[in-house]
Length: 344
Picture (cartoon, rainbow, N blue to C red):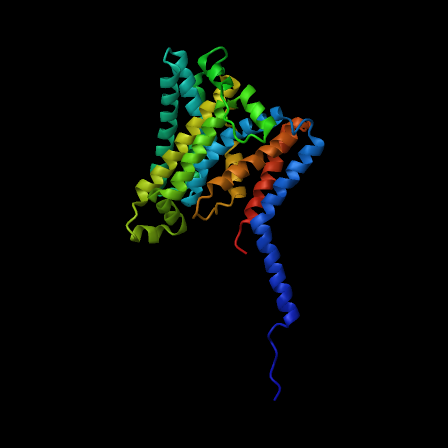
């Protein structure tokens, strides 16, 4: 008797394996390829893109996205999400500005603003962990209520911070460090202009979060909860305290980003500060490779993702494209990023 042959032919098997390899390459390197396309496009079509001034401004504008994205990375690593980050930035900046104009020094004022952001994160964490409300619902409520609360703090009109220590801090630069004697232009640039303080703060935040994500038990517990919360509970992990800690951490980083943005523009507009930044932060995390189902937090990936998002903004702003197109472009980038990171 002749046996039936239901097994795939060698040619079919090779074709299947090649397809799987291509899909894996797309998953691993698709966003890197997209980043290179953005850079090449900017080089040819964006005026003065490679000038030091443009590169510095691009990185400075990416600072709030990077800092908020660090907190969002940890939240998503735990299996949650936070779409209230822009509103929390506005609350923090509003509290800082109101405290400063009331006669409090800049350092206590900023501390109060960051504390207010931490309290917002605490509220998010408690509602998610204790009352078992879906994170997207909790943070949606805080997003709307928080934006309104920020406007209640400031009143009807924005507060100007021009000619104040906030303004001076925003333009402050730190003396550069000689990196390598052969990179003469880079060294000269640091010696003459220095590094903007916002970029220094961002670098410190990235370094701290890298340490937290790679070296602390807290991060291991966050990842365990994101991968399987029930197994984490059975392993003895305190789900409540870890979840609250993640949202408080995200709130603190939002407070830092909100105050940096306020110093950069020397004013606080509660209706506009941090607006749509939740989309940028989520896109940065998705591009960076942190799984939305929870698990390992990819800090450096988020930094890379934030730069990609900012490059989209640079294309729009410096080529006189209407701003609303950038929202569409970022949404498309987010969809592609999530698609490329899905399980094949």
